[in-house]
Length: 207
Image 1 (cartoon, rainbow, N blue to C red):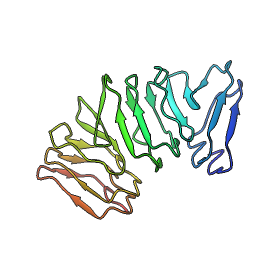
Image 2: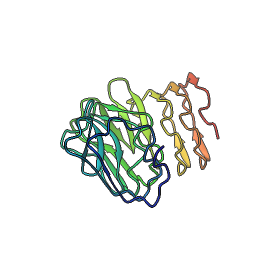
Image 3: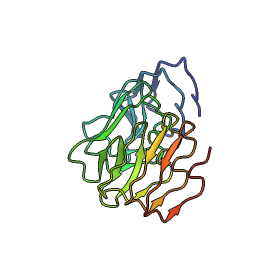
Image 4: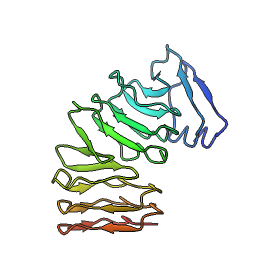
């Protein structure tokens, strides 16, 4: 949390000597629009103002108004807490892992989808779905869960802290809702649960 809630921060340059970046380092940096890393840094790099871990090609942060690089430099999307002011997020076909925290607190996103050709994920109605397992990984405001049987479970924290979500219909094919899946959705007024539901995990509708 080194720069947590540093709302006045607009630009930052990270040095070649940097070896480690802690969790939520840039959380709440709503106006950070330019982030660069020294080219000689062996651990991190920046592409299109996005911070990337070279080791596993994971995206750690995206600056204001940016999108995920589509040049193949990103394979994993970790704890981002960024992309403030970005209204449309495209998951590139190179991505093979999306963390459950990936787009938490990204309150400006209005459209979330996966690029065609991604081998692991696809999207529907502002939801990201792991195709083989039929698990809904994450969703945003105005999400519409598909009712064609392509989703059978909702991952833990899938809609966690989605303050604009007001209602959701969970299709009959869904049998499991994970821990805190809709926790802290403070505006949620209406939920339709499926006929085939077998388990609701703890804290699913907390707060």
